[in-house]
Image 1 (cartoon, one colour):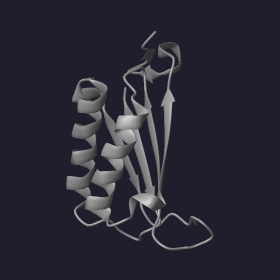
Image 2 (tube, rainbow, N blue to C red):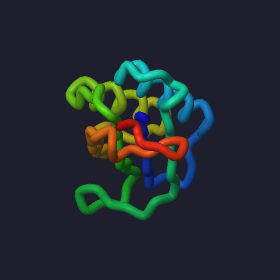
Image 3 (cartoon, rainbow, N blue to C red):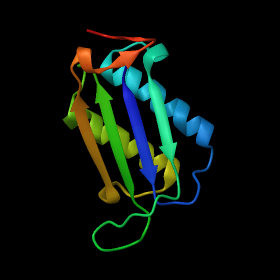
Image 4 (cartoon, rainbow, N blue to C red):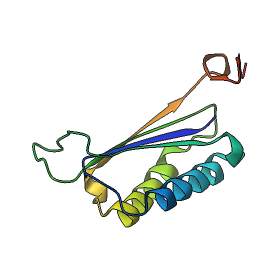
Length: 112
């Protein structure tokens, strides 16, 4: 049920598959949720600005049913994203959302 959705302004991300796998493993570890339920999404070439500049930037959404620790996760994800994409941490925004189990669907049901 954890989801990380990463949007970058860059036209492409080197080693996309490795990046998605690293995000999946990191999200599973940080939420304490089984990786078999983790979903990763990467959107490249998204038109966006940060601070009035069109330079490389990134917007991230992290959603889960519990298990979120934004202070720790923000640092961990910024480091990983910067390492894998070259986008500076001061040009990354991360949004965290704790979802109620009855509002998260999977396999024709909800978790609550």
